[in-house]
Length: 132
Image (cartoon, rainbow, N blue to C red; front, side, top):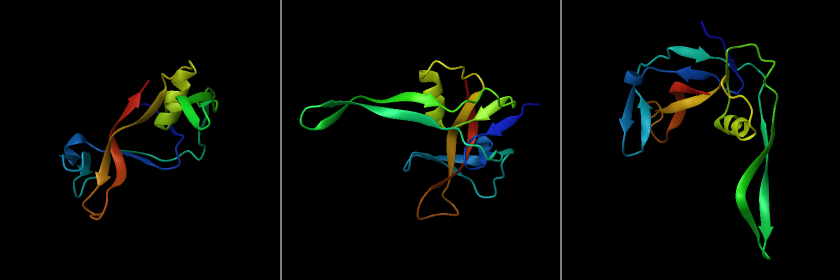
């Protein structure tokens, strides 16, 4: 069985696809009432961060040239678990720096609570993890 290390500050809840409903008006997947997660990955207590900086060109006004560049990421090589759940930003930074991302995962197909929170949508989980 796979082991998970959650390097984000919040638990990750994974739901079945049939527990969600695509709502075109808000372009989101809404969690159906009564749905329960098939997997919960609690936060590990250790966050992994990426360092980025702007590339700038100045013509009397600063402009971004090429956007952000990644400078470094926290070391994740010593984490023993099979899968390390990180933010999409961290995973992108590791890939841009040429690091091994085969064990890195981020949430995919985020589901929102629109039933218990009608005035606005709040992310409550996902349908899958994107690994590698």
